[in-house]
Length: 97
Length: 42
Length: 168
Image (cartoon, rainbow over all chains, first blue to last red; front, side, top):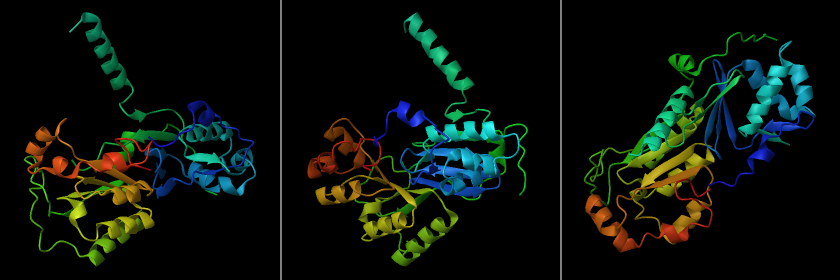
């Protein structure tokens, strides 16, 4: 098995921290958004909105995920995008810089 | 096969069917699929 | 900025109907040459095809997969490791971020090669063993791979490599 941190550690998503696309993840644009394939855990994740893809790609340009969400998430969708990032954290598609 | 074992297998099958197998459907903007082992050369 | 307003969440199975930009993974029978003769062989292998791809042509295929962003390729055959350029092609694919999962009978994995493979990212290895003991396996595989080689990969992979996943 690949070396994996305990689930509890990986599950925590703190939007105040600086995040990025995980270096082992390949992100491929699709009509619906993007496909993310993680070469470490072999997971395939469908990202189902272009705004979400832009957010994930832009994370490393912001000092915090919260700032990135403010800038990129569509109006009224901040909480949904925050929850989605938390899910991507759990899948290891994004990690802390 | 013992009766309780049969019941457990049926429960597992129902849960698997309901859960869509390896697909995780949630109301967020992502869906995850485990494809490891699903394709390859045998 | 275009506004994406999802109403109902897109259902995965509906997405598949519209196709993807590129394959997620591809399967590639690299050669039909093989040093064994398994009774169940799906590709009827054993003899090298005189028209099989040259090294340059194979690298061209890898270039196409990299351009398409195919995530990984399943490589089989025949026995892919009998190709003299196998490790060149493997390194070439990995260098272009195309993952490789190859299926092998393992007879060509020496201890040094096992170490080399274990050190590579993006590589998964599937070793075909068809029995819990050597006589059973060898009867299926057509020759005597386990007895002859002593399965060097089992002692050469570093601890924690795992049995069913790639060494990395």
